[in-house]
Length: 554
Image 1 (cartoon, rainbow, N blue to C red):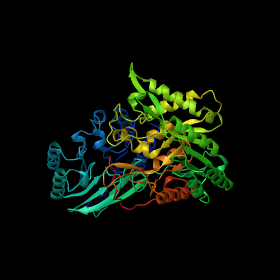
Image 2 (image 1 turned 90 degrees about the vertical axis):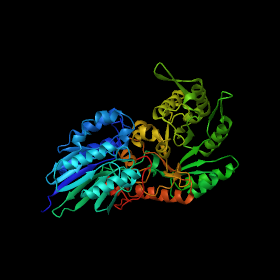
Image 3 (image 1 turned 180 degrees about the horizontal axis):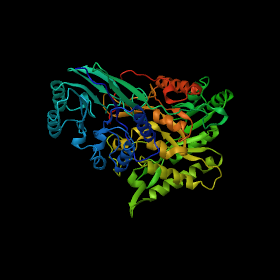
Image 4 (image 1 turned 60 degrees about the vertical axis):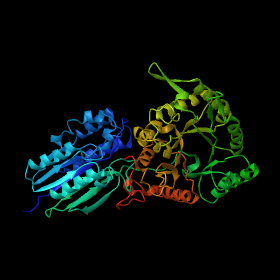
């Protein structure tokens, strides 16, 4: 018998937060509109539509899905299991009876693999669902691809798919695209709709179609919002791309001469260099054109035994050098102290401690004169070590966005009497993405962009990778592509283009010199071609290849 024609769209791995002002929320609304335009037989939602299983994000997702004008089939992902709230919202949509449907001669089954395996109840459900009708064709849609499931569950499902003539298995979870035929059926893995995690290309949805021959084809439909990269929020028409170089600042300034870069951050480890040589190198650099200079200061740390702030003398000495060099802004980390030392809960609200006020007075004492002279104070976020619980009182202070904002507010309040005072964030995108584990998902990058917004004075950009020896995440790696394996910059470019975030200096903070230069070239080409880029689909470096990387916290 001739096979029927079928069409469906897959939406997966959106990772929606509670904040409605993120790129992910915009992408969801676009996806619903596109589904209604395409009018497929059904929309399949394959999990991880929330980032941390909150009720608010689940409700927002459900409200958007209510606008879909075709049947919606749903199965949860592991993100919906990070808490109990999302599944209570999705309870009806995820009910077993709603996860199986018949479209002509095609039976569609959506087993729940959100635990990383196929539980006994789900296996029984699959067998019962199979026996409840006599469809000529079958396909399965679920969250976990076979190679990401546990071994026993993978073996069972592979055997079941083969023995029951399933022609297509579709999954998400891994955030990259891959299609392969094994064991008599086709498995298609899609990258999903998250603007901050989609690997290898823009985020998007996938349209699957089966023609008269019964074979399936996939058409990837990228989310392609308007992109406008220039002008930057910098004087004299400066291009925003620059670099941050640790070590000898004289070498850093000389290296920047002839590079065509307008933004430089220096970060001397000590003061054993020639200030005269630095002055000469900076003069040469400024002779070539306008320069935005940032000086990264040493850390200020809490000495709990002595009840004092350590590092003040070192910061003061470097600050004197920075002012002599004509720095436009000073980068300084948030106080190096634990959350417990800086704030405490009292009557259901956070209250600053004596440690907090001591740091605030120290910042005011150190930076008041610089602020008076028009220098910006760019406060950089830090990150927690791997596997730090989100609610640990011993985690690093200000690794939660609300703490970070409270600290920036506190410093700004100390110098609020100075006209034109510039106190804001130096957003390290890599630190925000690599923040201990749970906080990475509780606070997706889109939330950092939305909540910090125009309070950002500049950025550190780099890629985060897993160390092959330790298995731990590490920072400051080359950005090899805009849509990388840990950080995808689609969401960043959307926030930049819409002026949600400041179009400030982009300091490439890659430790390896060759990787830093390659990253700078990549981003310079992006901005040099800004006049040709009208939407995200025009971005350079897009590819439709099958990626092989995978996100560790999918």
